[in-house]
Amino acid sequence: MSDTNQSSDNWGSSDSRENFQPRTLHITKENKSVYLTVVWMLGITVFISMVGIIGLSFLSHEVPQALIALGSVAVGALGSLFTHSK
Image 1 (cartoon, rainbow, N blue to C red):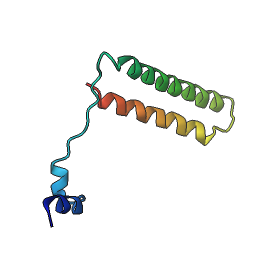
Image 2 (spheres, one colour; image 1 turned 30 degrees about the horizontal axis):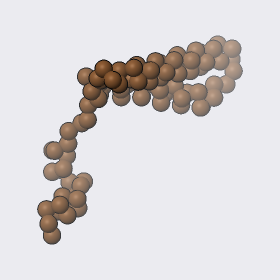
Image 3 (cartoon, rainbow, N blue to C red; image 1 turned 60 degrees about the horizontal axis):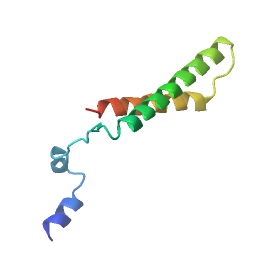
């Protein structure tokens, strides 16, 4: 077998983890407006979902699981964007 076949066969081995390099998000002048738009939209989503959850809880209504999931996903996406940006 060639080296390329061997490396693709053991993709789950500990050797492949040693070479793992996380990808970073480089914010350039060209994509800064897109990045900021995504951050703002995710932030607004988190804010609206938190207000909805708190408001429904205050009014003693049942909070939909979809609202909790939406807020959680938006927080996760924001965290991912902030940790991968330079």
